[in-house]
Image (cartoon, rainbow, N blue to C red):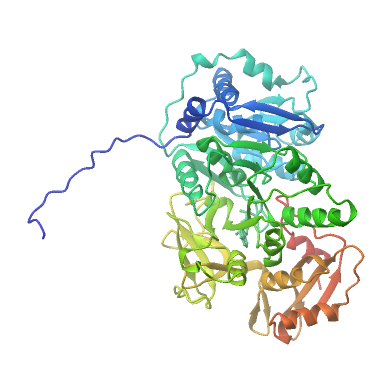
Length: 548
Ligand code: ADP
């Protein structure tokens, strides 16, 4: 029944800004005994309670204010994953500043360029990274440099000592700098794999909404009893947002520090067994190889944390990797996203419709990018500009829109190349979506191989090659071809002691339902696939190595 002339009614809800400060206060009050473990440069462990984290984050905020930090000014970090970096995640925004995580794997020139573009005023840097800092400093001058004595060594008097600075400030005197929920809290740059790095600036609001969505049961499913190991660097899309989720739920955090070698991660897993770990596929490929090799060479050296959920994203996750981990009781949850999208946009989880499906079907789904998370609108734009139907067949560019997706880049005009005329982010990723809503990424636009007018997916070829028992890693690129325009070239790393000929790999691909014309034109057997600064396969480098 409709009521004639019913007047519009205003909501009676409070207008309280979404804020990271709320998460910090909540953590201090509710989870004082939760633990934060950091692996130090000498591989020993340092333990902190959340009570200490709360106090130190507020001390940092107070110290930054006493250094004259003004709202919206950038405070850069050049740090590994550890407790002090977490303090920056909350302390810098609490002072009204914007935390800008610098990628320590970039060259000094690139870091200086990015720091200058962001106009970083203050820098927090690990003492073990001072050699890198000194190279950056000859190109970009920070006004103030705060050194965190990560190694435990005394900080040179020419710098400000992070711990001494905190010790001088009284957190009970601290008052949060007031803000709007749209105010900036942090900033990351795209890695520049496909162009100049571009700044993405996140707000209190976008960060809180992203955290809430990512933590939902079907996705990260974060529980207070979890032990979280973020292998994803804290400079890579804010470690995918897990530090915020962890603090929101008061979970135990285990930071690996600079020790990301598979042996070190396996050692860490023995002392501090995680229930949830995050990292790009190459991390897990290295880890499973080291683990399986040790099973024969040194049985009993390591065990894997059975029941652990592993969040893997940043690049396509091969089905063979998912199967390999599941054999040891670990489930891989794949996510897709970008620095521009906070980053979580889709997650592959067993939807209700898949209850009762075979394990093969579940693996197949887990190897897809997954289903869009709430608050993210996703469409597939075909080359003709129309929306492709969600039939699992038709491919096009993924375009997304939502409250934690960037609508522009720092100090850059809005370009047609990055945003559609109606304001959607153009991701540059090519995919199809099936009727259940599962996104299947075929490639980045720039990595697709166009052969005789047909597209060949490099991702599909890589995944099938990595399913061969002799193959450790594989990456496929396009090489120019007079007749076909482009043809696939497969760069393959064989497992130790293997000498599998190309013909055998091609036969394996034919068995995996590739057509003859899709098979790699050439194979190059190499020692290792070059990595980007965030640990993904670096196809640009491969294209330079094999120009034709
Ligand atoms: P970059 O790769 O340039 O360092 P990002 O970390 O922001 O920067 O990477 C975003 C890109 O990573 C996406 O556009 C996509 O190409 C790729 N990516 C992320 N997750 C996945 C995934 N699950 N499957 C395939 N590609 C992915």
